[in-house]
Length: 113
Image (tube, rainbow, N blue to C red; front, top):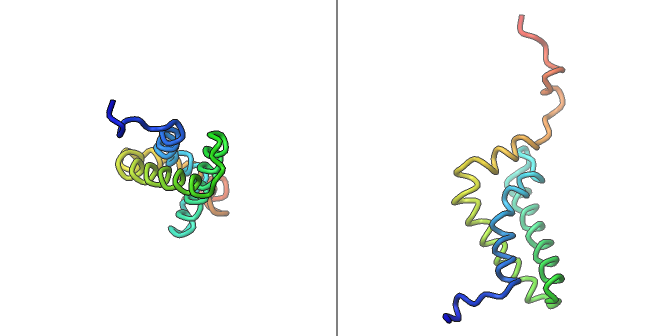
């Protein structure tokens, strides 16, 4: 068996979590946030998920958590750029879950006369 294909369960889990993270992050992020804030929220999400993955797998060292976070980050970035953004899934989720500014609510608008 090729050793390259012999990935551990935490590594496979990190890759899967990273792949499905962009739609989840789109639920959290608001479209009115700055790009910097969106990136920081996404990275914080990756760190939390990596810590939980490491804890469940019994990997309690900081280097293990950082390696898992890097895998999750790379998988999420790749899947976002190649699948979730081009298909419009993540942008649609973000647009649907972003809070509307006050006064932009349909009931608050004046009818066109």
